[in-house]
Length: 93
Image (cartoon, rainbow, N blue to C red; front, side):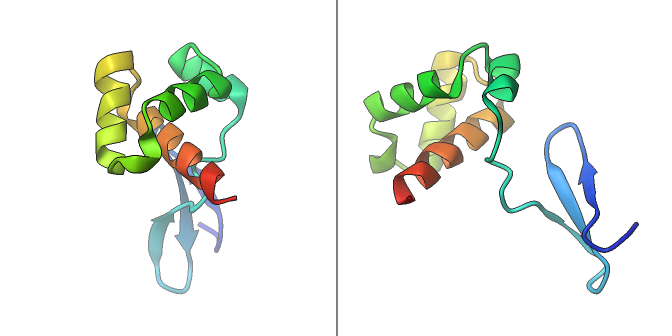
């Protein structure tokens, strides 16, 4: 494997660091396209942003937001985490 090479797995993008000999998770995993979100959740990013805003996700612990998406909307865990992070990062901008 080459330094900085991105390895795609079913759940996340990993980056091989040649110097440390470790694999780390790509830091911007929440940068996903609308097409990817629709494919995995059936709804566009705008729908999930509106849902999380209504839920007042910014006032809750991220694990609670992930659980809400999973339990109330049937979003797979990885995508619930991705959407939660995407939403919270969008508030920082």
